[in-house]
Image (cartoon, rainbow, N blue to C red; front, side, top):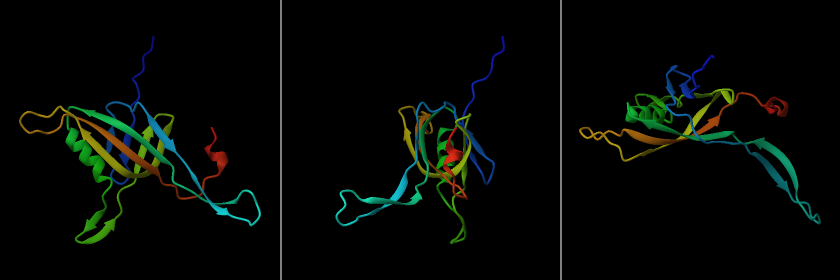
Length: 155
């Protein structure tokens, strides 16, 4: 009988190659895509006509749980992906792009972190008061360099 190790998801900083492996895979993922239409109102018509304008970004949100180890450091790493890089007082680079890897569902989706929201829970180190447990809500938006055809999205 052959056993396989359970696969863990992770986030990868595309610029540096650093990654944060999920200690626990998310129990829920929300994958949201919407489209923008202009409403054309025609006098005398009972309903408006719709003109396709553009797609909105694909938004993937989930929560990761951190327990023991460098909890505050891992939250700071995630939060750093929302900050730009400066050279003195001048903007050098936008926040780094991130790759979400989560098995066959997300084999390598590139995007940006729009929000990192950490909740530190009731377990803190007695001496340093550093958190030993956190729940971190991640809001990720896919970034693509070209228009995607509907047939590319279908499985």
